[in-house]
Length: 612
Image (cartoon, rainbow, N blue to C red; front, side):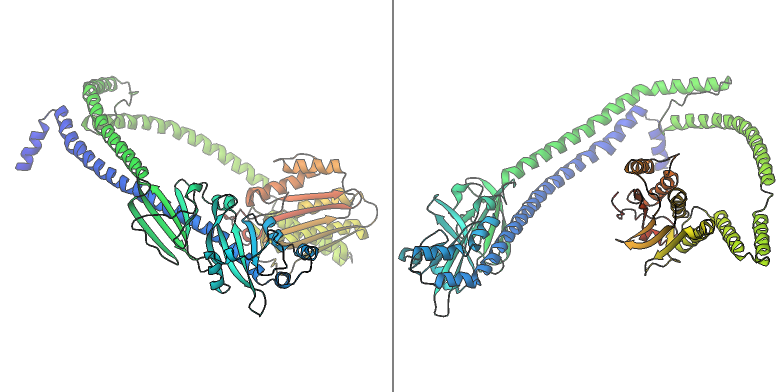
């Protein structure tokens, strides 16, 4: 009773008030809560995306730096084991000319700098007093021996270490690979310093949107977008000094009087004992700005979602009376016999449903009239088709078997009369005709196509007697019975070879057919030693082959074959023609081998054929 009373009460309410209640319950409240949820989710998504982008950028910079350092360690190994270099350092020189000649005979260090833009300089500090300083070789002084990097290199025992150096020439810091090189078994050694090109190193971070820093062993900065930061130490609370491979993430950290979040990625380059740190610094304000933009967008969407339904509701209530008047007018027209009423009411409420039923009823009436008319047309079409079928039956009364039986009778007569050659040719002709009648558009075994070509060649050989010879060569590993090809692709090419190449040639002629595999494709080559073509004629043939329907000239069969191949297998395949006067003509036909091994066409049409 309660439900029934509720329904009756609802039906008594005006539609305008119903719409307002439905709008408040089903639109206002859901949109409000959904907007809050989506705005919160979007802000979290923005934050997560910024963090993930920072991590990705850091990993990308780390990988590029690691590639650079790995290159320099490989070059360091070459220098470390270079016997000629050790011989130059250990030799005692009597004059500068002798030393200079020795350096000229060893251009390796200079070539490393020339060929590798990653290297800015290579310096070897030596204890040989008979050598002169020339940029590559520098005598070790007491001041150098007191340097921390020199002591670290001596202690390393030949292991490679990375150091942050100060360059007095341009008052700047740079990254260098330091290594002690043993010269002989007497304990003599040299210290190599291989300096990294700072311009190349900065190219690693030049396209980054955030601040990127790089340090060595948690010490001084050796790479930054601002050169003033080079050689300084980074001071970030919460950033732990680590060695080896590790990753840290800090948020809401103070850096240069602003809040930032940090992605810290450290790694140990191969063959070295120094840890490289990549530090990505992103201002928190960037995230805040995007979050605010997200909140603004969410509020704007919520307002649009709330205002738009109100406008629609006002439009509906104003249009309601028009809909009632419209349906009454259309019913009156239908009652008067006018069945061409307008489908002018949309929606799914009671008024719309009523009007749809009216339209359906009138539509059924019109359909009955239309079906009666179409039935008469169908009867007329059926009569026409019956007449066509009778005509085709009369035209097809000559059975193909009659033709084959006649040829067989002629062949037997020739055989009995001792004309075995004629009998053989008639047999080949019958096989060719039967093959043509049985062909359809489906791919057939390569063997069937080659047998058809072979029959054609034998018939032509009978015509030309000893003037014509041919060969058919199939590469080992190609199974003629399994491999499928489209029918009548090879025979038109062979026929062109006879008609345009050999018929008008004086003397002996030859056609060679080669089937082989090339880059997972099948290549069929038809080559004749006929008259050939001039360059202008060959260019004309090429143009007609590319056309979709050449009508004249030598390219009749070639154009059709080329278009069939491209339509079935794709634009990467087709035919190519080459010819020269007096030497003959060669035609290449390419197919995708994978497509040919199945009965139907598949999607693998992206394989490469040959370059046209």
